[in-house]
Image (tube, rainbow, N blue to C red; front, side, top):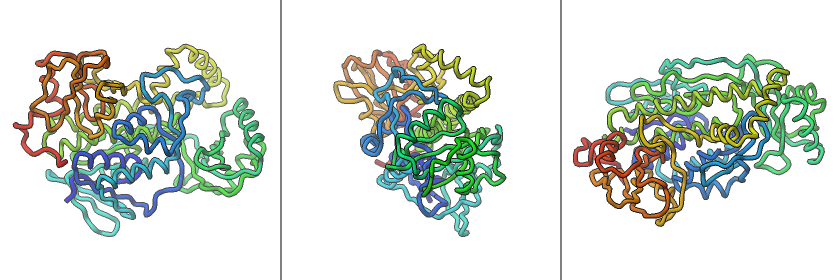
Length: 485
């Protein structure tokens, strides 16, 4: 029996599988498609996701496969210089989602996750001991927990009967990548002209293949069957209607459609079954937040679910996944709603867009909006305490190397500049590093495995009051053994 079944082998599912395997949890990933998708829906990683990869020692392989771009101009596509951000990675890493999928699948495989392709989940049931998953071929699998990472049309969510309130799609766009007959200079000029006249056609060179262009075109209406890709003739017709030309497009690599449906699961946990990524929330892809939001869901959930499997999780730790990530996704839904309005060509929204563009000339406004999109401004509500508590800690140079290098194993970390503190009872879950360097500007910080600050200060008694909240009872009192290493 597996400890965890992950339904869905996209970036959220593979990130979660890797995080669970890092903690020694037995994982099986079920993916209904027999082969990885060739559709490129997302185009890169924002700052917080880049930090996540660095915290797990994956950044070098991602940097080798992508290109760095300034971390600005993402809010409603309003072009502004990037502000100064509190991060060692103040850039966007451009790469097609297919590459992200591949790298995360490789990571999960290297750590020993079992991946079963061509396995569609069709039913599930749960009891006090575990979950039974029913597959399309009639076989059944048993696990202690199951996580639905199976996309916006999530089978897991539907089988649970979890409410998915929000707004249905009112608008739709066609997405495609194809070659063009015009030379690059004419395409650049056309893109610049269209960008100043209306926002219903957007295109530019695809970052992953020379000579390929990526088009987003407003559809005439919402298709009755949104799972069916548009015909090439529909795509070229809309280009001619909206842009006056089809640019001589030919040889499409893929065609798809997406809408502005905005919904969020009422709860992310139902007993032993949880939801993550698009299975828990959908929204328009404005600002490129969807893939990143799912990766960050998995990063938040992985260590908590592993703690539950291994028996040392304190009461409420697994429920903190919903408590922390549900508000984050709700904020993303809100900012994409706002951005959708600002993308409208109507006079009213365009007036607001011009006003916001002027306000973004103020550094504070630009930074606030950029931190919102890049997820670096998130602060989980841990209650009262030091201003750092609840925030992620940026990478920094220590006397013993970089901070993020100390987080590669996915354990907690007490970074102690005083040399007087102790977490001896939790040595199987927390690394204690004494470093007398100049950073951080606080005597000591306790970091969770996801890099968020659980405690800051210098008082030993106060530290010992906070440690059990995130890391359970001292190892001598734990009911079951810790993770296999």
